[in-house]
Image (cartoon, rainbow, N blue to C red; front, side, top):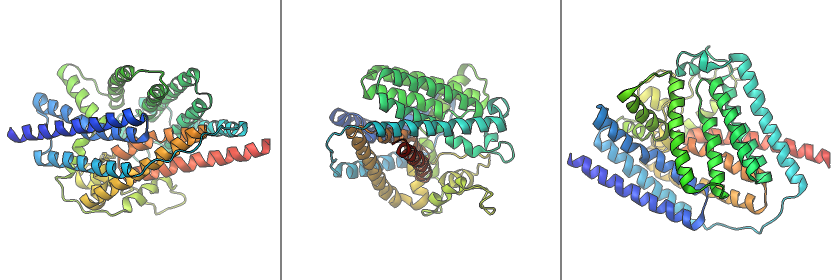
Length: 421
C-alpha cells in the first residue's frame, strides 16, 4: 500500500508541475503548437492513471507492476523536461506584418478545392468498392484483414477535407466560415465513420478544429470548451460502442466507459507494459518501414505484408497479439523500442525543434496573412496526435504524406493561378 501512496504522490506532484508550466505558457504566449503538444502529451501519459486506478479498485482490473508505473511517470516527466528545455532555448523571430494579395487568395481557394476534391473522390470510390462497412463487418479488426476490404489506403485521403475547410476559414475569418467548418466537417466525418466501419478521427478532428479556432479567435470561452470536451468524450464512447458492436449496461457499462476512454485518450499503460519485456532495439528502421504502406503492391511485388514499425513490433512480438490491430506504443514507447532510454532523450530534443519550427511557421503565416500556411499548420494537429499517441515512426510517414499532398495541390493551384494572370 505504501508504494501506491508514494506513486500517487509523485503522480500528483508531476501533474501539478505540468499544469503550472502549461498555464504559465498560455498566459504568456496564448495559443501555440507548443501548448497543443503539451496538452496532448499530458492527456496521453497522465490523464489515464486515475481511470486505471478506478478500474483496479472497483472492477478487479489488472494494472501493470508498480515499478513499471514508476518508470512511465519518471520517463514521461524527464522526457518533457528535455523537450521543454530545448524548446525554450530558441527565441522566436517575429517578421513584419504583410497583407496577402488577391492572387494569393485565389491560390488558396484553388488549393482548398483540390484538397476537397481528393477527399470526396477517394470517399466516393471507397464506397463504390466496399459500401458502408459499419453495417457489413462483424468486428472492427476485419477492417485490417486481407481480402476483406478493398483499397484500404484510400482512407488516408479522407482527412484532406479538413485542411480544405481550414483554408476557407483563414480566407474569410468569420463566424460563418467557422460554423461551416464544423457542419461540413462533421457531416463528412460521420460519413467516413459509416464508410470505414467506425473510424472516429475525422469526426473528432472537425470538432477539435472548431473548438480550437473558437478559443483562438474568442468565439468561445474556456468553460464552454471544457463542457464541449466532456460531451465529446461521452460521444466518442458511444461511437466506440457502435464500432465494436458492444451492448453493455449497469456496472459493465461503467467499466467499458472507463476502459475505452483510457484506451482512446490515454494509453499510458501500453508504455508500462512495454517496460516489462526485454526489447530488441530496432534502430531507426521502423521509420523507414512505416512508409511501406504507401507503396502499392503492384509497384513492389516483394513488399512485406507486415510493415514492422514500432506499433507492430510492440503488438505482435512483445504482446503476441495477432488480431490484425496495431496497439499504440506511444511517442516514448516508439523511441524506447528504437534505442532505449538514450533515444528517448535525444528524440524529445528533436521533437522540441519540430514543434518550434511549426510555431515559427504559423507566426510567419499569420504575419503575412497566408491562409495556406495557417491552414497547413493547423492541419498538422492530427499529426501531433499521431506523434504522441502512435509514435515517431507513424508521425514521420504521415507528416511527409500530408505535406507532399498539400504541396502538390498548392503547386497545381499556382500553375492554375499563373494561367489566370
